[in-house]
Length: 459
Image (tube, rainbow, N blue to C red):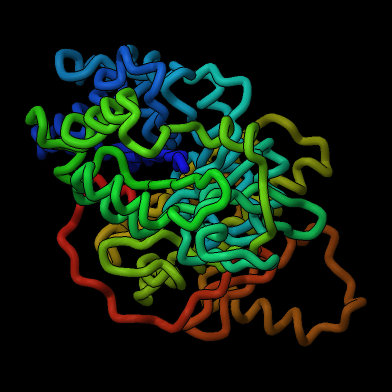
């Protein structure tokens, strides 16, 4: 039986990262730009067979479409042409994502919608898609409570990692991994597409075509249904994708030879868009998805330790929650009062922008190395709010406010000029979730991994 192969590539650069690399690590910046530019160039002329899913973060799209950046890299890569080629719907199915690439289950619930809506705004403008059917959770960080939001934003399916999928209806190992399923949260449901973690690990680091074809055949040989094999990795990180030598990178050493085998009828697989597979073969069975992320170089992703393992990371996540509550409470008040313009509205918009940027996953991925980047944006939030006489409570004050609120009677009068109470600080160092924020609880702190800083973090 022919297996259907869905290739998914994640492309992300943190805010200002490419500009920094161009100044300080010029060749690395060129490698990244070449790796992205290579994708459509390699696939030209293969529209009949090639099928690639792309996730492009909002910060990357913002950089590539910035006129100053385009001028800076002129002669290296034509960013305008690159964005135009990504509009090719014969080659690319573009997946929605979060604008600043946050780990969605770790940030306040109110901020998740902002990230998704802002991404849709820039993507509709640059990529000319009337609809984005699939959703790529940044870092594949997923929790079931995201389902209503994804459906409200119009998404048909979401990518999740095989490590976290559990069957609700009876199904075999092959069915669980190689069939689309339904996942439910309340009255909402979404189609779940399962990433094969083992095959994706191989795709990330370099694999031989014959091995891949044999492995897919072995894994799907007991399937009595058309299997959908989904592999997902970064698309511009690591030597396998960055290598500029012909015959020594993913595209020239693996994907083009794969297309040649498909064309000859000897591959045993067929590249496909996920939406096309769903149109023909539909969805089968129901699953639950445990909260977690994809595996990183140091961690399996089950409890977000990569992003939450140190006290500094936990403190930053708690600061996200406190800051978000102040901003969104003030925005709600403006709405109730019919305030739609003026210094207060402008300051809140600016503060929200800094908060969303602070929530970039890269700021936490590197342990404590990049936490100061989040701190800078959070400090900018506080300065901006101070202009309109708003203050983000410090951790100790937030905890005290919660205790005072708990001690007060439910019918205690509220002063007419009082602002809503700040979100409570967690009671222990091992917990960062706040009920109002919708964030998930964080597991006990683990030793921080030792790593060499990867300036081009996607993971």
